[in-house]
Length: 113
Image (tube, rainbow, N blue to C red; front, side, top):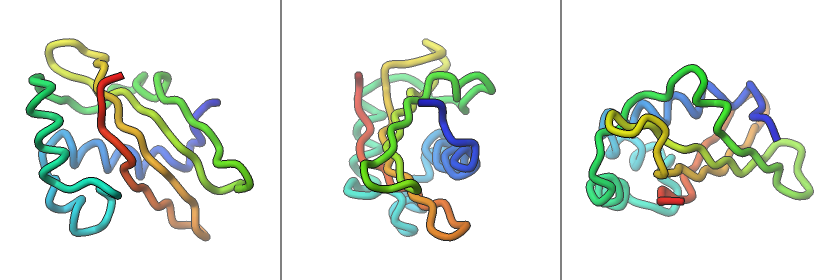
């Protein structure tokens, strides 16, 4: 399912924090979800490539799944991009919810698909 455009700014901001290695901020504001800053740091180090910002067409590679029984919550899988590969196998899985006008993003996993 195409990604709802209302979700993009919040996802973009999350990805930029990850690219910059600003995991502590994500942990403080709760966006790391069930993970920790150390978990994110370790997964990226083990992947062994340098992350870069999502390109304009990067949204085309996102997979979005509505959460059953909700019209305001999705599970989203988004491949990240690296200097070495461009589109990578490292995938960010998120739970995203719209609460009034707020878009709330929580990382569910960061893994290789």
